[in-house]
Length: 168
Image 1 (cartoon, rainbow, N blue to C red):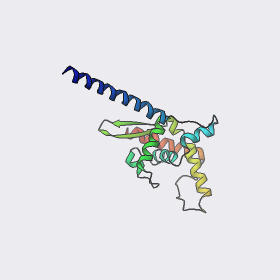
Image 2: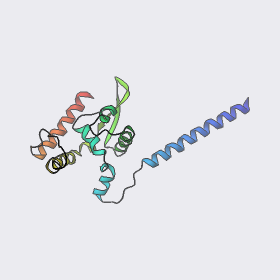
Image 3: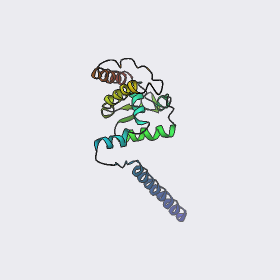
Image 4: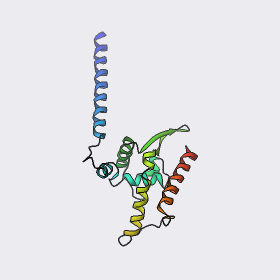
């Protein structure tokens, strides 16, 4: 009987070691290698892929908070890519996730101040796309883009803050 217990204990410890090693491997894979010390390059290494700014746009402008809401965007991001991007954005403290007291099963994703500070970039991309992409594709008209940039930025940030304060 003691012999079986020892084997079980060794197997259990081996599983724990494998689990710890797996976690270390996963964390190392999540560490991002930056191409250089250039601030533009470093920023692009985090938010310069095809999806990250669209996720931030959906959270910031469209007030999407759940995995399902974000995955239902017009661009149709694959769930595996969305999951990876949310983890990346969380790693770099652009977003955080919480569970609401009334629903412990579902994660709610919210922007951090660092994520909200990307508002001017989102606004600039919107303005640039509106002015320069119409000859290539149909561009949606966005209410309020004719305002002063600082007013647009303040309006977007205030609207997001109001949503967070109301719902969370």
